[in-house]
Image 1 (cartoon, rainbow, N blue to C red):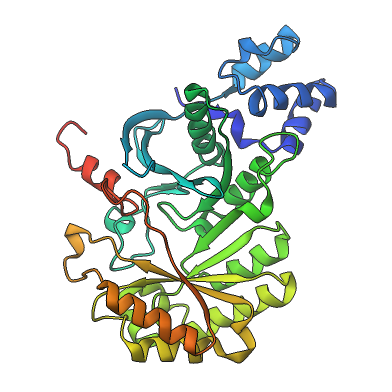
Image 2 (image 1 turned 180 degrees about the vertical axis):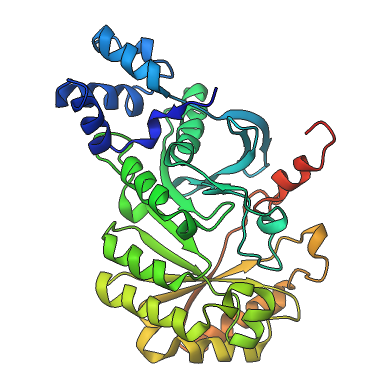
Amino acid sequence: MNTESIYGLTFEQLTAWLGERGHRKFRASQVWDWLYRKRVTSFSDMEDVKPDCLRLLEEHFAIQTLEEHTLQESADGTIKFLLRLQDGNLIETVLMRHKFGLSVCVTTQVGCNIGCSFCASGLLAKSRDLSSGEIVGQIMKVQLFLDSLQKEERVSHIVVMGIGEPFDNFGNMVDFINVVKDQKGLAIGARHITVSTSGLAAKIVEFTDTQLGVNLAVSLHAPNDELRTRIMKINRAIPIAQLMDSIDYYLEKTKRRVTLEYILLKDVNDQREHAVELAALIGEKRKSAVNVNLIPYNPVDEHSQYQRTERDTVTAFFDTLKKHGVSCSVRLEHGADIDAACGQLRSKQMKEPSL
């Protein structure tokens, strides 16, 4: 029987839920502390919570509803978790080690319908959204793994850019963010959380208005509509001008920087003229508020039309942007010796006869 994860409730929702059933606010504080500070995996381990409250919670919720299916560890310390949901679906979650801390990339959907022509995540169409509890559960699964190593390590950063389009699962994504940044629990700072979107302009505006305080990254990948439509079908519905208008709204309202993600595809979008055009698109007005993150492409067997850009070409693209006054960086690669592309491990496992 499928059971809702209690991780899906924000502190305010948990307080209201218990209050409607006759329990005072401090009871929610106790439960919250056991979940996120002491990190128990059974309600019976909540020693100072009244038995009638524990029975109530056990009747309606589970704690962890994700099961580890496969774990891959890279030589650089990156760990990719393939997790099984209660309905049997598989999702990916990735732990990455940086100098600034431990970052986890979470998935928001089972499959993806955005249909970017270079992406492994879209090889399997979206079948459903993840609940907020299933998204929080990924962070907790990784944190419990770290706890088991007894090194006193903690998840310090989150990127919401795994399988799926986060803004297509907007409500659950917002609840997830409110849970993980709650200062009474995991207390992951808003400035340490980044949400990536393929460019749902109306949702960028809505996201801005939530005032969550977290970072925004936008998957651009091309400097003009013709090329972006060719590699990202979403551009047919939301062309670049509309997308940039929503980015301008975010910049004006939040006074925060935006990251433009740009995957370099050999002989497709990686030439000097593309860099010049990208700089012109960003323009003088946005240069101080935008950073372009250049991403080396991880080849996917099913998308053999795309190849990895050579190092010299990456350098030339980077240098051209810099000469035009655009802030840019080249993403440090993680997990290159395992199924590095997002969705690649899941896609491979879904082809196995045992599944």
